[in-house]
Image (tube, rainbow, N blue to C red; front, top):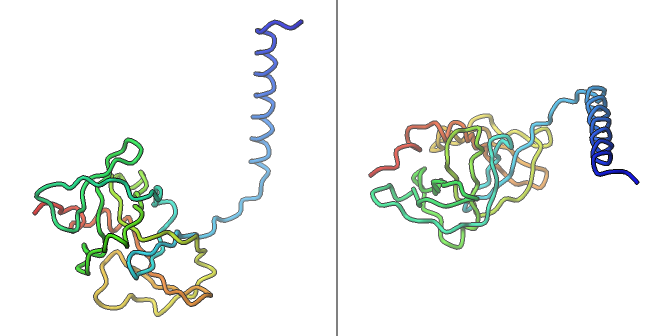
Length: 180
């Protein structure tokens, strides 16, 4: 009968063998270029594409605690898995009508790589889009768009989406100016 020490040693040997085999497989795997995928979200009546590496997660609308002396587009703070997130109504920030309560069902939390504990209200996420499968529309966004709204695309179902650059949004002075 094997002792618990011998069983543990056998498990460690098997784990090392597995790790070695996995490392070898990864080394031998072809280096395929990463496809430019984007998260597709609807905010009110607008459709946006967001770079996957910058989007942290989509969560159901949490309780939002209002913060006094802030701009109306800054909805307040929410606790998302122990992380305090400043929640912003993006359309309202851009000077458009604020989202109605029935249009705010989720929050897109910014990825930690952006270094900003923030999120934007989202009506709904509706999939992943690969840029190579989309048709680019006339290179420039229509006038009246924010600096973080870039190229526009159309998918094969006829849906028009605007690339939303979260890095530009997160670093803009307008986004950071929440105090009244």
